[in-house]
Image 1 (spheres, rainbow, N blue to C red):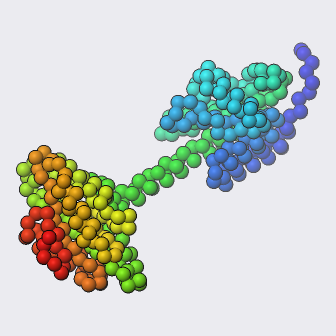
Image 2 (spheres, one colour; image 1 turned 135 degrees about the vertical axis):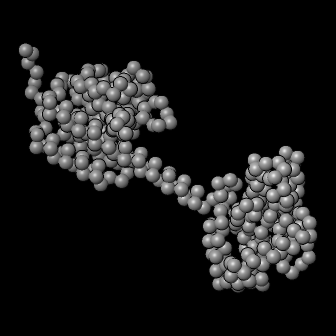
Image 3 (cartoon, rainbow, N blue to C red; image 1 turned 180 degrees about the vertical axis):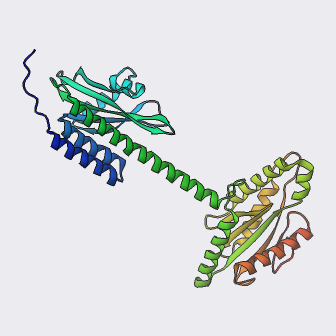
Length: 344
């Protein structure tokens, strides 16, 4: 047997203490990068490693991404990251094959021999292994891992995997929450605000105008002869028309305005101040310039009411705007009626 100098190993008590600390970092950590670095530092201490790195697999990228490191300078990290880009590199192979490698030897950047261990990060989802990346530790040679070292390294890999998986799940929950929030406030066909959002914004604008002594215009737009278009050309053509009208509305209003689909072929506008008629006329003029859809000409009629002259509540304003819209419809396609004027 060769005579090697004795290896200064952390004791079992120190390793247990380190794993307890790593578990606490996982349980209480809120930032993934900080949690990864913390667990890496604790794990390196527990097994006497000189360095540790974590590479993660991004769902949208084929290559591994360096996501945590302890004990290596920037130049060494840059070199390692470039090397791991080679699919034959041991770290890349461990992540790909989901196979741990203990005690491999390699030459470091300074030419010194090091001993490295690579353990894939894996969680089980729906009964299937979900690969997340790999953790790699290194020691100056000579070093031989014992069973306790291997157990600690595997435990650290599991803790790292759970930290990464938890962050992914939190991001997914956040994305879905934002999606549901967006769906709850937008019309799926046109992408405009929906009736629920319009009602809330109208209450807010009326309250603000009431406090400040200002005005608010409410306009209701209706696609002319929409029922006949649906019957003659089909619902797909009708949907195309609604989307085109919605696009014109979105492009024509001011930043302070709110535009929404109110239901069917009706759209509504909240225009703070006294510019409601101007905005409505701009909308109608631009819609009149739209190309026909499947041979169907597009025009809209509009009715406008104003706060506080035509009502002091949302219901009163909408009723006044609907009455003006009915007058515009009777006057012919592409007309605007305000509560105090004839059709124009």
